[in-house]
Length: 113
Length: 112
Image (cartoon, rainbow over the protein chains, first blue to last red):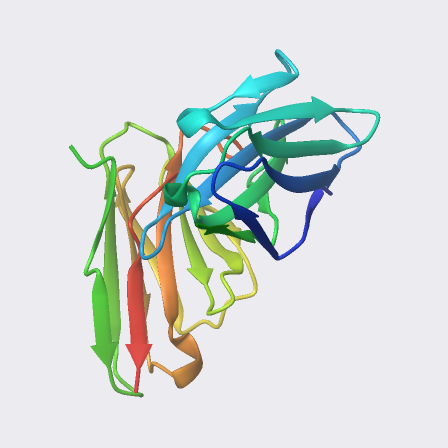
């Protein structure tokens, strides 16, 4: 079975600083990996996905993530935080033939002015 | 055009009542899901349908009953509502099970 762990339930950065949200996964077969963002009072929106193509994946709103098999990680980064990035972020894992995504517990990102 | 829509957005009701939440997707997807998100933002999958067939039924009280009249719709009926049912319920869809999912805006259910 697959699992995902998001390190840090709450991350706080200053506006303009680097955003780094950590996600580690567990899977015995090649995984599919996803990052979702949830703004207040909204549904989840897909930020980016890794499905065994390029290991560096670019998503919307300037976010990107790098798949590192050796570290079983899929950390989300953005070079310069903006106030509008404040939200809850979820990492999720799946594999070919799976019936569902397995979500992490979420990381709340706060941006300080 | 909204890809995944849910109605109602807010639902306030008393304990013991029965209520339904409706979900529709216009993405042509074959798989639809119901999730429950608690106050700590934890997402718990409840049900999944693929081509109108139930494929996931997590440990959910049998007061919750999903119904999929066609591939584009997945409704959730809840009987005898309890205080602990208060949460945000999300509908989602995907082309294939286990692949990227698209979420609706959520239905905030408050049981008093």
